[in-house]
Length: 87
Image (tube, rainbow, N blue to C red; front, side, top):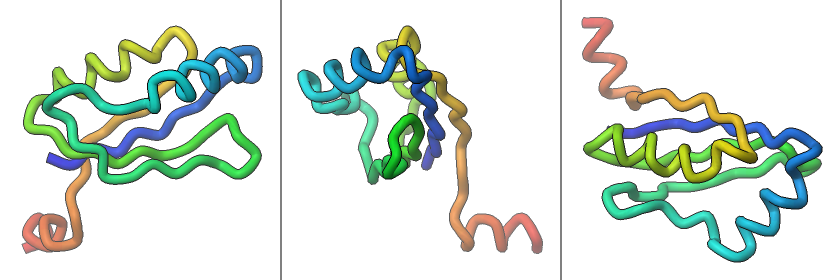
C-alpha cells in the first residue's frame, strides 16, 4: 500500500532534525520502500511517499522522528484505484 506523509519541523527543532538526517540519511526501516521525498525550499516541511504492506512499519519509522518532527500520514491510492471507487 502507498502512504503519503506530510511532515513539519518546528523551527526550534530544525538543527537537531537536520543533524539526525545527515547522520542517518533518513532511510526507512525494513519493510518500508521509500518512493520519494520532497522538501520545501525554505525548509521546515515536506512530503514523503513510501510503500509498505504493514502500517506498523510506517508507525515505527515515524516514532523514531516524532521527538523532532510532526507527521500527517495517510494511505493513498492512484488514479486507477480511485476510478474503481467511482464505479
